[in-house]
Image 1 (spheres, rainbow, N blue to C red):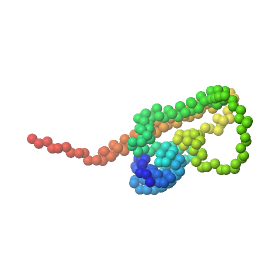
Image 2 (image 1 turned 30 degrees about the horizontal axis):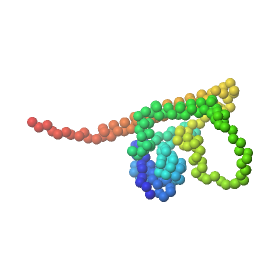
Image 3 (image 1 turned 180 degrees about the horizontal axis):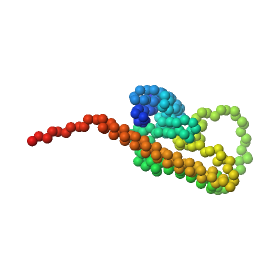
Image 4 (image 1 turned 90 degrees about the horizontal axis):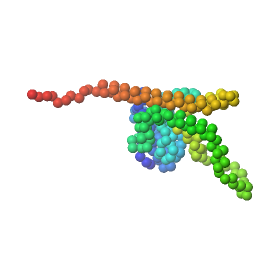
Length: 239
């Protein structure tokens, strides 16, 4: 069993914490509300799990044994586009903590990643990267290879984690492209490239506002705590 690492979040006058550790070959985690354990869960070395208790739902993504890729509080309902996520603060001294600090110090720059991902996807579609690679790579005739027999074996559960699209869906916010975008007339087909970028821009703006609002709430809470404290009296001046 390894030592525990705690991810923390102050939310609606409650102190939330998610402690993670490794026990044998299993990842383990527990959710604490005001230092009281309310939920536990375990998972594979690479896994996505949920800790839920009352109004609190936490999504935890492990990318390896004891390594957390994402730990967020999920709020909202259906559809997924109406859900909002609030990240927990990672333990100090970790790579996740440095990324979190960058998010806090440069929220606009960090939120712009949504737009970059969509723009890169559109450029790849326009350039036809797969066709370009096929034209550059040499054509190899593999007809001489013997045909393999068909084997009816269910793929292992961990195989889905090799899919990069699966990980992008877990790490990035839930984005739903409207169904009507997939059935546009030919003259309006360009909208299927523009609209995802616009949606990504709206998501980025919303993330910046949400993060700024969370910072303001924390500062307000800190100010109220300071007001409640008695002022420290200095040494009395003597003559």
